[in-house]
Length: 230
Image 1 (cartoon, one colour):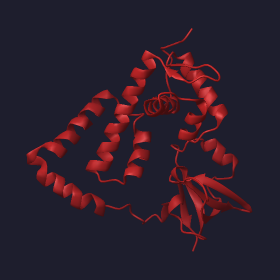
Image 2 (spheres, helix red, strand yellow):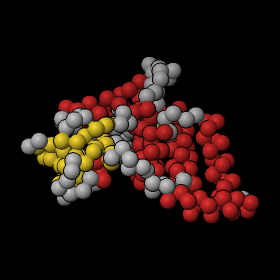
Image 3 (tube, helix red, strand yellow):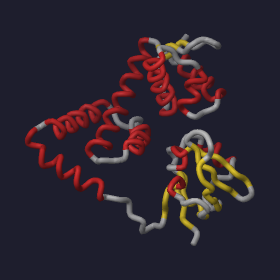
């Protein structure tokens, strides 16, 4: 029997959101599609689907498309609304790069509730639509792109490292999915990495760690901070 009162982690929220998006686009969601969308392994998908099914949020059977229950569909709609509100706020008001805004929204959506989402949506709509906000819109469009992160601490994200440059890995954000997997690969603070360029297929970059070549998703590299070695 499903336990609908069990808590749902941020990771499971990501799965539920991905399932809803895949179903909306393709009318069905298979485990392989979910794995590709989230960049995770098939065993990880299976474990997550079993957890969601145990909470009464999906209907999951091996070799059959995943279906959302009414409760799961309602929960997914709430998660997607939070994501969309945060992405709009970052991209349209703060003028953050759309890809970066989407990635940040994925992290923030798990910690904001409905009151904040509703107030944020009201603010966005007011700034975008009200005539008396025309001056504010002009100010945001001119000023926000000029605000860049300070380089005083000498840190950059790994995806910004130039080809053939070496850097010391300083910090890994806890928001990085599969952080233990990366630690097992040797991607830990203090490691020396060298950026070798983009991989032939997909949104991947190649790095050299000691004598090993590794491929990382660009989206993951954004959560890994390094200091360039002169």
